[in-house]
Image (cartoon, rainbow, N blue to C red; front, side):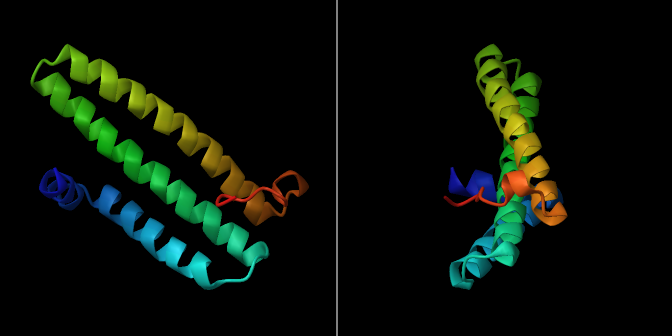
Length: 111
């Protein structure tokens, strides 16, 4: 399973880049004090997580379609839809964090 995940990440540079953003973002967040800068990095990392998960499940849907697996298409399609919606929410929150919107000033991606 892990070897398939790593192979999938190497085949798709968007997934690998998003996973790198997540790891680096969470490392930086671990050492920063709470504040505006940390909130921005939190939301960037959360958005990267949704990009990586969406890419992984879209790839799984494509494989399910190629192998004509209806169960795989439904299951992975629902997960791709779920993480696609999460990506939209996370992207909006990221934009709000950078714009300094008051509605997201108390919202945190980690709490």
